[in-house]
Structures are given as structure tokens and as C-alpha cells.
View: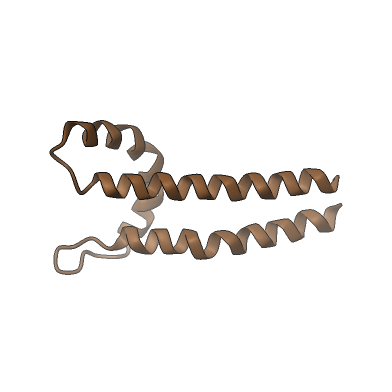
Length: 97
């Protein structure tokens, strides 16, 4: 595998994770305005993309005092584990080069 292809894959994955974190953050902010029509439209667009990931954390983190904090754990996991996975993938791709 050419080293440029490995770099392209790693950079693309980094960009994807940054964009996905931004989409998650926007979706979380939209939940604060449930009665606004523009927020409902945004939720309709973003929910199919973000809900599968957020549901993973909602399934094992119960609401505390009626407040759902699973989104915070989901963002932290993506922010902390994303770079680790990218680094491991980058090393694996470079070892095949």
C-alpha cells in the first residue's frame, strides 16, 4: 500500500470524526429547543445520523435525576477514543506499506 493512500485514509477519518462530533453537538443543542419549528426540522435531518451512536450510550447510562447525561459520555468517548483508533489504524496501514 502506498504511503500516500495510508495518509489519505487517516486524514479522511480524522476529518470525518471532527464533522461527526460537530453534527452530534448541533443535534444535542437542538434538543434544548423542542418546541421550535426550526429545531424540529434540524432534528428530523440529524436524528437518523446521530441516534444510532447516541442510543448505544443511552442503553447503559440511565438518566440521573431525570437528566440524560449519556450524550456527554458519547461525546467524550468519541473525543478520547477517536484519536486512539486513528493512530492504531495509521500504524497498521503504515506497516502494510
